[in-house]
Amino acid sequence: MTTPRSIVAVYPGSFDPVTRGHEDVARRTRRVCDRLIVAVAESSSQSKRHLFPVPERLEIMREVFADDHRIECVSFSGLLVDFARRMDAQFIVRGLRAVSDFEYEFQMAQMNRELWDGAETVFLAPDVANSFLSASLVREVAALGGDVGSFVSAPVLKRLRRRFS
Image 1 (cartoon, rainbow, N blue to C red):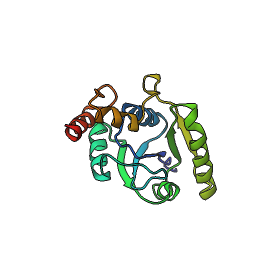
Image 2: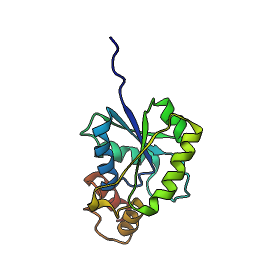
Image 3: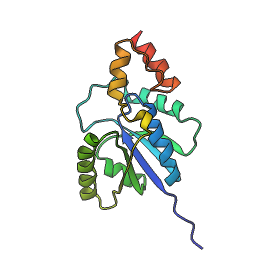
Image 4: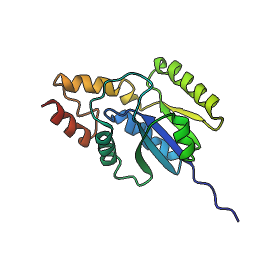
């Protein structure tokens, strides 16, 4: 008798900071996998100025997902497909907020598939309440003194307040 293989998904991103939209996608991904690896990219394919260093982003995310033993938060460097292969992932999950996200994400999915034929990408739309939300927008509003409490979890809000106080 063979033991069924565990279904592993990788959810990559910069998560700077992790928003309720990211949380929604991660928690809903658990419906279709046994283990979710939320992977913080140490380098980005897009040039971004980061608010929190990678170790602090990981610490925040581990607090946010502390209630779920099936979500593991780690960082990675290099190609996503190499990381996904090392993690024995069956698929990569990406969130799509708007049609404008699709073209870039589709190109990345196709490139990943060319680099590794085992790279399957699943796209999830966030809950409608989070469809406009982006980490960069949260950073900007927080930096200008706006209340972002409904867009991020308590551990994130605490660090944003400390950063911008």
